[in-house]
Each structure stands twice: as structure tokens, then as C-alpha cells.
Length: 390
Ligand code: ATP
Ligand code: MG
Figure: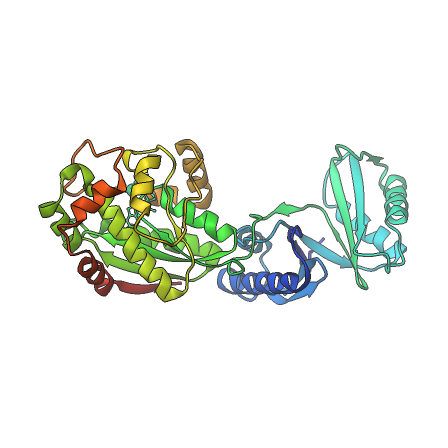
């Protein structure tokens, strides 16, 4: 059976009133854009119905595999289903269910009908029973409601009806854009791209900031973040990246401050600069890839001392994740192989093997007295190069 539509479902929890309309419109636009980029000429239209979106496929040119792969990357989709349009009429439903099930080898089956509301004349129970009986009689198969060998779903809404064999899980979450904007601090490591992904998955549009120490390091980390963002663009399509020079700041920190505090002071400058960028782009939180206790700079005490420099929320989506869990997620979203390519981390420049693990804010402030903080932040901001990656 050749599918002519894809039914797209989101999770409805918390969606009320105007909120729902906003959410559905954004999800619809995101689906359209994703299809346009990843499988051009596949969709005739994407229409909104109560509780679902319906993609009408261009029969001649639609490639279902690439459509499925694209939709798996659209946050906000709970599941989707390539489907065949039938009619709200028992005989047609019987024929179409028969045709659908004829595509697979099975011994037992289940019919799962659903209607959007009670205005639809056909009752779910009637459809399940009548269509089920038809399959038993014509195909000589058994009904199994708990572990069917094959499924036939029947979805009825407004004046339409569809049959389909399976529900393909989407990423869940919320459509990118409904939650507003955040600035994600992206290093070349494994963690920060996963943190950025989790923010996108909850509907945030992510603007990226990367600090580098070129010319004291190679530009490898810059290439890596570009590649990571290209991969993460599967979820938000288009990204803005700020590349900020940390080297001039590091030089002063190196001459003026005690070695064991340096990483933390680098981090404080990163946060100050990221906050300014966030204000500039109208973002309302900073995202980092920190995970509690993973490395010396990520103890509770150090995170507090570092975070003291900004009033903006710092969100750490990975705070409770183990390294292995982060690695698994990074593999899932496709950033792991990029992260493990060698680069030179800006924060390993001019720092000792044994950094402070319990720095108090006052200790860091005392170190910074010797620095012209405002001017260094300004230097960083002026050095920023902005790239659009799409
Ligand atoms: P990651 O794998 O994300 O690099 P990590 O375990 O190496 O994390 P750190 O190097 O301590 O951890 O960095 C903690 C967080 O600080 C990173 O997740 C990232 O959000 C931010 N960060 C570190 N270095 C940079 C950088 N050069 N540019 C932007 N953000 C950075
Ligand atoms: Mg790192």
C-alpha cells in the first residue's frame, strides 16, 4: 500500500487556549522547513487539525525513508505515522484495512480505531469489531489485542479517515522556538553539545558561543564547533555562532593570578561575555554542559563561585547525568564522533594539574582585583565574530 499522508502527533499535556495554537503553528513551520531542507519536493501541504498535523505527500516524488529520518529530528513530535487516506465508511475501511494488512506476514492482528470527537458518526467499538471480523473472515487470521503480529490503526477526525500500520516515535519535547532563546556555551567537548540539544528539545532556540585561544592553539576547536552545530542544525535548522577570542584575556590572567584559580577565572570571563551576548540577542538563560562533580571545576563550591559573576540563570541540563549517559546521548544525536576528534582546549592553556576544588567567590574576586575586568570583557566582545550556520 502506498502511503499518501503522514499523521503527526504531539504530546498535548499543558496545551491550553492560545498556547495550543502557538505551539501547533510553530510545530507546523518546523516540519515544513525540515522537509524543505531534507527532502525537498516531498510535501504538498502540512495542515493543522485538532490535536494533529497532517502532511500530504507528493506521491511521485516523496521518499518515505528520508521523510521518516527528517521527522525523527523534529522536537515536539511525540510520534508520526505514514498513512493511507480512507473514508469514514465501513466498507471502505474494511477494504483499506485488508489492503494494509496484506503488506505484511503475520498470524495475529489488532485493529485500533480512534475518533477525534463524538461528532463523528462511526463509533470506535463498531469500527474495531466490524473491521476485525472482516479480517478474520477474509484473511483467516486471529485477533490478539496484547501482542499482535500486525497492527492496523484507524484514525478519524473531521470528515477524514486514515489507516496506518505503525507509530514511529519522534523525539518528544517541544517545538524549537516556543520556549524563547538561550545562549549555549559550546566547547569542543562531549558534554556541551548534548546540553544544547536538550535545551532545543524543550523548545529553546539556541545561540552558540565558543571561546578559543587562537593563535596560541590551533583552530581545531573552531572547526569542531562548526561541525557540531551543523549536526545540531538537524533540530533547529539554522544557528548563530559567536566566536570569541579568549587569548588576550588569558594572557592577563596568566601574568596576574595564581595558577590554581585560573580555570575558574577563565570561566568567570566566559560567563560575563556570554551574558552580554545573551542580552544582545534577547536570550534569557545560559546553558552549559556541566555535570556535578565531573571535573575539578564542576564541584558545587566552584560552580557557585564562578556563577557569582552573572545574574542570568545558568541552566545545566546535564547536572545529574553520568558520563556514560552523556556519551550515549551524544552518540544518539550524532555529535560524539566530532567531539572526540583531537583539539586544544583553551582552558588547558597555562593551568596547573591541580586546580582549586573549593574556591570561594571572595578568593576569586581578590585575584581579579589585579585585572581590568570591564575592559577585558569589552575586548572579548569586540573580538567576537558572528557566523550563521545553515
Ligand atoms: P565539555 O565536554 O562540554 O567541554 P567538560 O566536561 O570538558 O565539558 P569543562 O571543560 O569543565 O567540562 O567545561 C564546562 C562547560 O563550560 C562546558 O560544558 C561548556 O558549556 C563551557 N565551556 C568550557 N569551555 C568552553 C569554551 N571554550 N567555549 C565555550 N564554552 C565552554
Ligand atoms: Mg571541555
